[in-house]
Image (tube, rainbow, N blue to C red; front, side, top):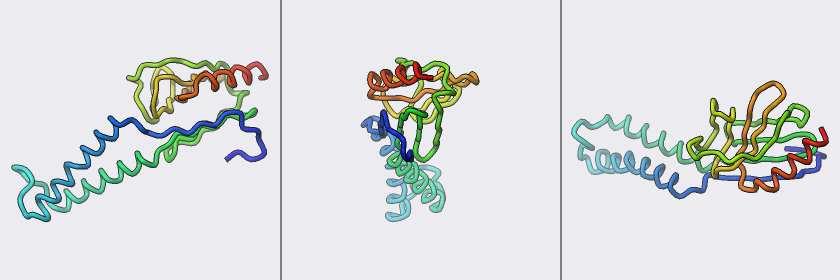
Length: 165
């Protein structure tokens, strides 16, 4: 975390969309039902049932994905020196203001998707919800975008910091 630096902006976002959670839990319910049916009730699950160990591995794999989704969060921290983007547990990026050529709030299509996305029109995208984000164009030509729910506040701080660089 940042020590001895004034924090100008701090935001923490989680995957809280009910539709995503319904889909994930439905996906978990299939191997759960399979385990109950095949292992506990001793009835084959489907016309061509999986081996019991494969069903158990599938269940724990899906459970792990659910836990990962529950633990994921996007933290954005802006100080006078840098923007710190932390997409727990996948990414940890710090970009100094001196590295940034342009910083603007953009409205993007939901088709960009959620999570850590690469090879998008905005470069690397860190997003967990919404359709607005801070799009950065770095002096080295790379692009980065971080989603935000507090876009007006983030834009004002970014514009103020860009004037000082």
